[in-house]
Length: 159
Image (cartoon, rainbow, N blue to C red; front, side):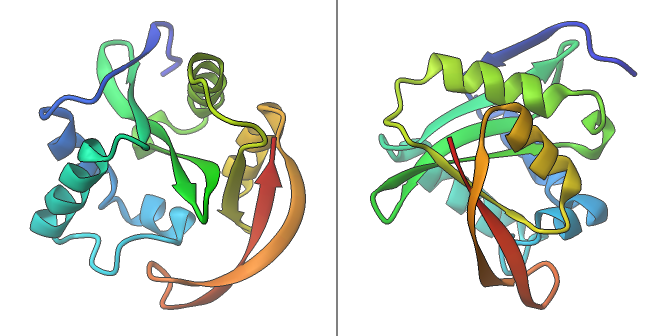
């Protein structure tokens, strides 16, 4: 399916069960790598999201594709630096949707620059999205990936 209609909108409560279902997809969990300790714990997921939505420093939008909730894109601060992240449900991979969403999000948000991102070194799709959106690799790091139960390498990006 190629997505034709696309928009970003504010997150609403009805999005959360969809986000939860998307974040329990095994392929997605593996690719994201840096997930919650218990990604299938719905109560913890909802608590975490309530905290995100209440945080005025977090900018977050739901990605809508052909009338369906496809995922989300957000920015937040880590160690005082703005960072972006995004998540798409498995059914929406490979359509250029993440690139469209991140491009649109970056154009809409009045975020300090530079802005950063990080991605597991083997997540080639996400690396490609970031590069298409003007991010460049500025370094590498290692971190414990809950989804994989081990420490993995990641790329650090800047735009």
